[in-house]
Image (cartoon, rainbow, N blue to C red; front, side, top):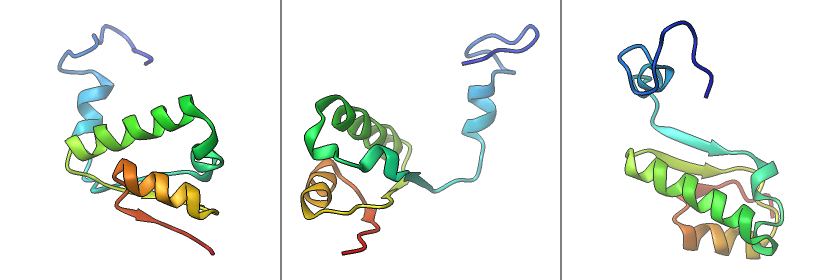
Length: 87
């Protein structure tokens, strides 16, 4: 995280707090993170963590560019709310 001026992490002017006030209700995970997710443990852990954080903030999570049924199955198991499966 990059801090400007005299902002402090967690302080009233931090970028983190400004972002928390954004009116968002959905997180989209790009295909770059989804591709071959069923074959890479670290990649899978990263995406699962994104789901957990987003769901903790009551946000819907969409996985874009899902290309295989095994990718989709893993994403559903992780708690994916929607996937764009072009099969």
